[in-house]
Length: 136
Image 1 (cartoon, rainbow, N blue to C red):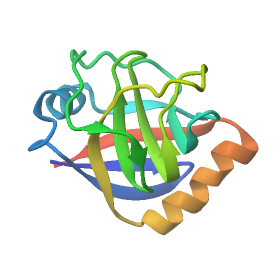
Image 2: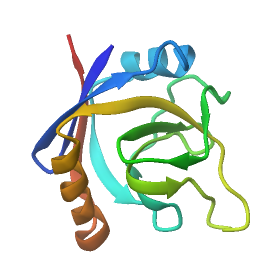
Image 3: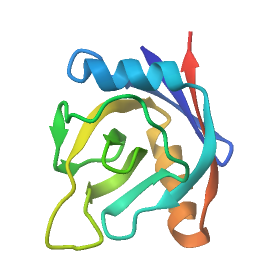
């Protein structure tokens, strides 16, 4: 299963990790397409998340991630968000003493460098338009 991540007009492809997070990836697949904004997650490092909430029907953690790398796509069931790391990140609660539990559900496979550069606009310029859609 592949998706496109379109951030501020830049398109990258990602592979969903359906072998490692089958319930979360199936739930995301059903929810697509998603049109929202990308919001910097200031306490988590180089990462952003969806502005809107997306209940994909999964509350359990699958393929738990801690320290994330550029291109990792996560599901944060506690707040119903999908996120993307564009550098080193560790998903955290606003209380920095405790990390948040997330599932790593995908990995960007193409155009990562351009997506990383565009992701810096989220940090420096605020919310950027985001679309997640299936590649059929």
